[in-house]
Structures are given as structure tokens and as C-alpha cells.
Length: 332
Image (cartoon, rainbow, N blue to C red; front, side):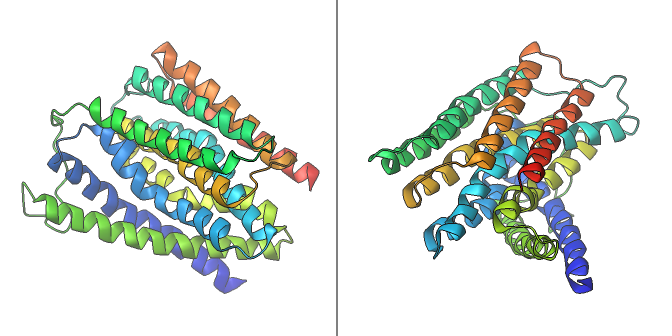
């Protein structure tokens, strides 16, 4: 137990440090590709940090030997969006509140492209509702519908890049960490740092998930419960760490774009894998996670649609995750 706890905390610290290099590198990659900050967060950073949780779903549904193992993949595919829609957004709000004085902010307002994030929430909600509805029915061609989810993500990426502001940010970027004395590092150096950081994030995340699952086992939790409550929190840790780092730098639009983009990946790619390789049928806990995620997204959509988002309102959405935990514990 002691070794498990030590590895748990060390891997969490390692993920944070690796994320420092990742966000620094991905910003320079975006600068080299002449992408605006929102596209960097929603496409480049989101795709990179979503790889660990997508890998969890892939390994479980493709190589799982038993229905229980495949259920772990489906649980991860549903748990990831729930964590992002509740805890990840709440972390951004909490970090903004803590860093308000250091960032010299005279209000609690979040500085983002509200119209764009509102549109992202609406797009995610539309895809997610279909994803949940398909978990309630069974029919012969359901596995083929996974292709539509992959197509939906491709359209999302195309739209994000098409609508990206290609003008470089006026705000200077921090020096590339592996080339600190270069004012204009090449795209190759930025890409190398990003890939190395991402590989380390993947390794540390795998270690973190393993320790968290061991803790769940020691607590007597079932694999299904671990898949819904613990594993998603662990696999979404890179997005959460990125958000903390970017908010500390006063770049909440990058933080929120990263979360929004990761949510779209979670709504499409793991879902497609689940439909390809499992019956994709939901029980009570999975359906509850879908309903609560949908409520959280609807709440966020209303916030961004108003054009003014308070950091404290973002923190409030975490209450829905508490409702889900209470439901799962009561039913277990």
C-alpha cells in the first residue's frame, strides 16, 4: 500500500512537469503552423492529451477477453466526457479564482471566445445525445454507425482549423524549454519537445491509472466502479494539468479550448471503438453518467451563450459530478 501511494503521487507530479513541457511545445508548434490559440488548444493539444484515455478504451474493447473487460472500455468512454464536463471546467474556474490577484484581474469574468465555445458545447451535446441514445437500443447495423462518429470528429477538426485565427498572438511565448536561448525555434525542435513530453505523459498516466486502480481494489471497489469513477479522473489528468498551467499564465482560452476539444474527441473516437467491438448497451450507471454529462454541457452552453462567464459559475458545475458519485455509491 505504501509503495502504491508513493508511485501515485510521484506519477501525478511527473504528469504535471511533463505537461509544462507539452504546453510550451504545443504553443510553439501552433505558432509554426500559424494557428490561433483556440485551434492550438482545441485540436493540437486536445488530440495529444486525449491519446492516453483513447488508448485505454482501445485496449479494453479490442483486446479484452471477457465482457467485463470490454465493459471497462465502455465505462472509460462514458466516464471521460463526464469528468471533462464537470471537474475539468471547475478546475479552470478554481484556478482563475486562486490566481486572480497575480493576473491583475478586476473581475471574475473568464476571457474567452464565448461564441465559439458556445458553438462547441452545442456540437458536443448533439453528438453526445446520439451516443447515449444508441446505448439504449439494439439493431443489426449499429456497429457501422461508429464510422459516423469518426466522420463527425473529422468535420469538427476541419471546422476548427478553417475558422482559426491565423494571426500570431501579440503576447510573446515563453522560450522553448529545450532551446531556451532561441527567440524563434524551428518547428522541428518544437515538435520534438512536444512528442517527447507527450510520450512521458503517456507513460506517467499509465502508471497513475495502475496505482489508482490498485487503490480501488484495496478499497473493495468493483472493476465497473473503478472504470466509471477512478479511471476517467486519472486519464483526464493531462487536460486538467494543462488547464492549471495555462490559467496560471493567464491563458484561459487555451485551457478551455483544450478541454472543449478533448470532449469532442471523447464523444466520437472512443464511442466509435465501442460500437465497433462491443454491443454498446448501457446499464443504470452508464445511463446516469450520460444524463449528468448532458446536463453539465447544457449548463455550460447556456453560460457561454450569454457572452459572460464567471469563474465561480464554472466551479459550480462540479456539483453534478458529486451527484453522480452519490448515485453510484448508493447503487453499489
